[in-house]
Image 1 (cartoon, rainbow, N blue to C red):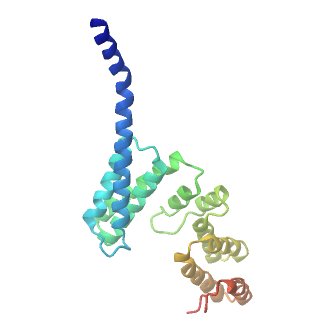
Image 2 (cartoon, helix red, strand yellow):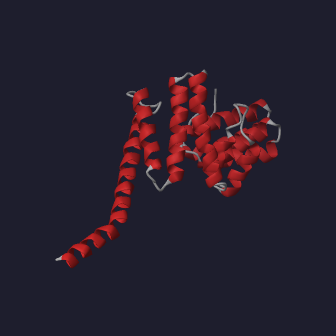
Image 3 (cartoon, rainbow, N blue to C red):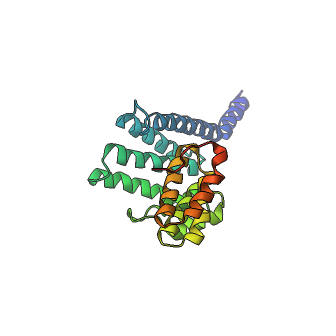
Length: 224
């Protein structure tokens, strides 16, 4: 009897840490899923969004990370984007509270860059952390090198090169970004691109771009 009790105690001690670890992993997964859903439901595009709902989502994802949620990249990107939404949607883009939340956002992006220095999305997000003065071209170039088809990195690298007068280098990047971007930003990116071309008198490039996208059946592409 004593031998059986000792054996049982040894068995509990052996499986205990693993069971606890599994419980923590399961809890972290649940918190992340609940938090990410709240963040999605309360983003700036949602008609039923609330500040408290967004803050609750951020807190749940943060707790998931503390409990060891394994996908740190996704969690930090989500937390950074959610803090950005919180800062601009509920704090007007200025003031002490805005600055505090923006610092949380920037901190997540900086941590991501330390962990994933060759990740195109991480490089792109960090390229915008220069005090509202525009994108950091070196980071945009690194992002394009890491992923030649990363839409936003290509587009903004191209746009900023064009604004600096370097159209020959910038146009291919901007066009590649437009070709790879999602439908939600396609027209806005196309409009900005074409405005720059028209303002510089590059009408042949305008014509080439419009003809290339006739197959998409988008009427009056880029017209004012």
